[in-house]
Length: 545
Image (cartoon, rainbow, N blue to C red; front, side, top):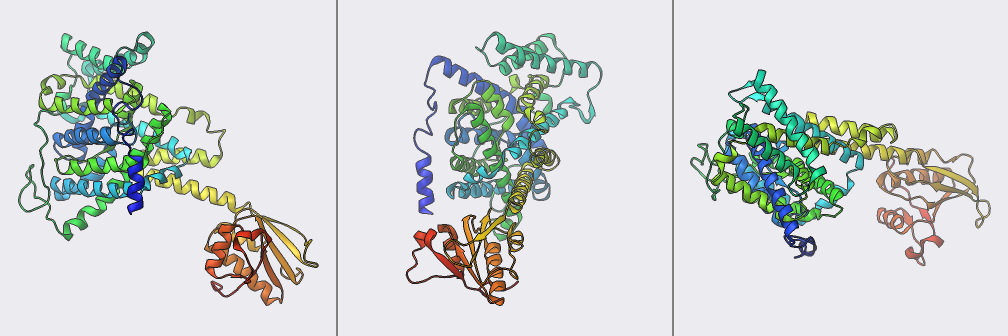
């Protein structure tokens, strides 16, 4: 544990935590970062409110989460340029907990979720994100792009009756303003880069709507975002909480209720955050710290749970807005969080006038930029299994949630890889050059659970000579199934009155077989000089089943 903490401390160095990283404090860079952060903050407002509605909590619960999670991860996160806040992937899990037990149990769950993420960071489990194959990454971004697109459809519903879609002039105005926003975002970079295109799109469309009094839904139609500064609130105890529901008693019964939700939320949050970290790293050309990001997400959620927020994780859509607007440092995320707080405390009347059409247009451009269009072109060029994984992860992301989709994609990819290796094990046979009359089986390919049956079928016990040598120079003994297969073959040769010898064991194979008790090692054997050593096999260690 101490070594893990020490390693983490080395990763979170002062250079990693610097506000501007290696970009410098030039006027142009600071302006770009601040304008990018403002753009992100404007886009965060309807997203946070919408996700709060999905979770069944007050809009301020989502807005406070967006501020606190965004602020803390901007300061100490593993990838400058990433934006974090309340997300839909977490909200859909929270809704059942809130409906059954109330919002105070949600706050308690968010605290526990953060603790679990902190443990993952200290133990450096974030490094396992490297096991996610590229086809799963493609399916992840495609699925999230579709989810972001579908989430915008709710903005085309009547604010007064959310079961009804907009109709007539209001619908046409909405569509026209969305198209205008997208056109500005597409065209402005061709003319100038002084102002981020998404911010210009929001500003121009907002001025048109306000100036001409166009009747389209605005942020204020969703809900009022006016509130005070978030204050400390302990969700544990007896009595009534800040939103009129019962506090969560600090006992084992509460733990049994919130633990399953906390585990799922922590897993979803870390998976989405670490995949977004990789994606932003690919775009910016800079590596991020996975363990540091786990620590940041955990810290943010623990704090958020004690300040009345619904928790959160990295937001791929907002991160893409930030990166595409030029945000590369911690300053953009920090300024976005502070702007969001300013909107809540002082500028709510102004922000509530912003038309949702402008924000929908921004998110539609995020969808276009996020979706991996090249994945459609390469479908016929990549192995069939990889193409299947891309489609599978995309569909599962849309139909269920991100965590399940990634796990399914990794499992399918791993099984495909295991099957491919299982079919590659072969053997070349020849007469021994050193042992007269002995037959040598030169094994090609790894020996593990997938190839153990194929390994057994390579041998001809009945017709082999009295001495057989199995050469592992081009193979590796990987697991218990491999040990079982070796012992089974040795037992067959022993029953036939013949001798089986292993040769050219690598150091790791030697250790594995020695630990299992299969090697009969002579007193003069040197395991570090395994190339020259032959080993007899001791049978009856694992049994025949």
